[in-house]
Structure formats: C-alpha cells, structure tokens
Length: 339
Image (cartoon, rainbow, N blue to C red; front, side, top):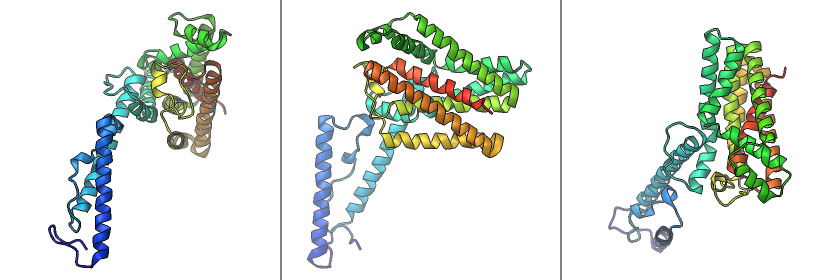
C-alpha cells in the first residue's frame, strides 16, 4: 500500500528502490517530452501534455498514481482533439458543408481520411433523402435517380467528377508522367475526360433508376447511402502508408501515405459490416451478401485504378483521389442492380 505524502515506506530497502526507479523513469519521460515540445516534434494537438502533470516528488509518496492518471487524461483529451480535427478535415475537404478546417497537416489528414466514410455517409443520406422525396412526391424512379445522383455532385462542388475527368485525360494522353500530370492540372477537359464523365454519370443514374424501379424507395435510398459511404472508404484505402504522392504539393501530397495499413483495414471491416447490415435489413441474408459484395467489388475497382495511377504517374494527386471515389461509387451502384 501507499503511505500518505511525506512518509516513507516501512518495508525495508526493496520498495524504496522500486519507488526510486519508477520516479527516475517518470522524470526521464518528463525530460524527453519537454525536449520534444521545445523542438516541435509533437505538433499541435498530438502533443501529450506531460507538463500539466506535477513532477514526481521524493520516493515513498502517493503522487505517482495521480501523475499517471493525469497522463492518461491528457492522452484521452489529445485523442478527442485529434478526432475533432479529423472530422473537420474530412467534412471541410470532401464536402461543401460549412465546416472550418482548423489544421492542415499530415496528422489532421490521417485522422480526416479515417473519418472519410462518415462524411460519405452524410452525403449518401442526403442523396437518399432527395431521391426518396422525389419518389414519395410521385415523380417516378427516373427523376428520383437523377436527384440521388446529383446531390453528391452538388455537395462536393463536382470536384470528384472533375478529378475523374482529369485522371482520364492524364491516363489517355499517352504522355510521360510529368506531361500527363501537367495535362491533369489544366482547367479544360479533353475528349477522354468527357467520355469517361458521361458514361460514369449515365451508369450511376441508370443503376439508381433500376434500384428505385425494381425495389421501391427503400432500395434506392439504401443504395445511395451505402454507395456514398463505400466511395469515401476508397479514399481511406488510397491514403494508406504504402501509396506515395505524385507531386510535392496539393491535397494528394498532404494525405498520401498518412493512414497506417492496419487502421485502414479496421475501418474497411467496419464499413463492410455496416453495408451488410443495411442489406440484411432490406433483404435478409441475400441482401446482406449483395451489399457486401457490392462494397467489395467497388473497393477492388478503386484499388485497380489506384494502382494504375501510381504506376503511370508515380503516385497520387487530388484528381486521382476524385477518380478513385467516383469509380467506387459507380461500381457499387452497378453491382447492387445485379440479381
């Protein structure tokens, strides 16, 4: 047991030696954190604020558990701040919602890409609400599909569609990597981009129309919500540690390689389980299998495009992220219409 402050332990030299060793360890931690803080090794909210905890006193006192508790509380608060910064980053960069990005660094980008499926869920629910409203007003499955397909474009400023078109121009140019990247940065859209954009939008509208027409408003709305989430999950996987950036600047350079592979896989499992749950609520085991399969095929298609772009351009850019997202969305919707 621990004696009151100011009194020493009564059990001979061994407890005193253990206490002195633990105190030295804590003091070393304080010293290392102070040096890291002064040198900027722990930027922003990721820094563990050990300086808020009192330095451990002489051996034999009861302050050590309080110090460790303060460190634990500090870590919890730091994790909460990192999550908040990540959510702001995800919504501020992936949507037009009025969310201010408070930090623009790789730590915030890592958290933001981990929270990207949440931003996709919000976009997907908005698309589902628009399509369901048109359906309930009697507009028919086609207009409901158009509404569901247009909401993500509006809520993302069309940047993902623009990235799809620019990536198609870069891949179809047949130029070396530097020239292809320069083509992708141009404001105009080439023939490859126009054709790719046209077919992607047609496929999305046609698939949503099939879902609304064959399964009713519930299937159409579920398809829109699941697709929005899975499409942003593709961005999480595209940000994993093994994927480099093609340019030293831009959004791609900020988020590329920030997400540890094990974290990306953990988020993937959660989203796949959620997609299967949504399918099960509609169609039982078959619905769960179909939605999980659609998510898996969508991620596989997105990863294929990602690998193609990395080999072709030497890495990823903001346009490549947009193309990956739209590819996953289109593939998921198409697979949901099967069966």
